[in-house]
View (cartoon, one colour):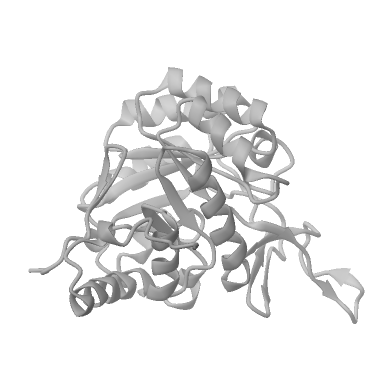
Length: 306
């Protein structure tokens, strides 16, 4: 039995530890069950779900960069109905929070997916993706202005009683007004950041590496940007913030917690090491024991700037 407390409370969303998987990097959770014990995770954030089945963009749609990864998957998914019928019954057998990432091309799309998931039951929270850069309609278009971010959050808050996490885009000039608008719209928590827009070129063919030309950059390259934006968002709002972006090991997690994130999502690192989330949980527990810190919450928001 652990000698330290890893549990965190995000405004009523209770997690056994602050380590979550990032949407789009962990399938529907079940794909990773052969490699790690899902029961040990703070939560699983499933692949973005839409009202319809989505094939995503044409390949090539992934390119590895010097310190990260470009992707233009285009939110490929099996649709909310197949998720409820095929994935959710198996996923809910595990003792971990199930967080459904949702997206749409219109606000009504988001509302219908949210309502369907609430009716299905066993969903701990919704993560509302208003930040994907790889689709032509919806997604990031809702997350780049305070008015549209407020509007979609407010409509979802009225339509569902599920815990609402709104995932923000880094592709804005100033994250603070977006974060405040989402809070005022009724979000229970924020998560950030999604990927940064980038591109890569094949110098022999003089063609883009991705069929979509541009894609979302993730991995270690974006961690300093993510950390800065999480810091700015935390200063702007009162609701909990979940940090995402380039987290590869324990010390990356500690940086986000010290800045004030109440939990983190691990993304690209899952592709490098499928067991990285469990290894980070074990490392966090060991770190707290070694330092004589009985509760992980004692680390959160301990940044000193003077």
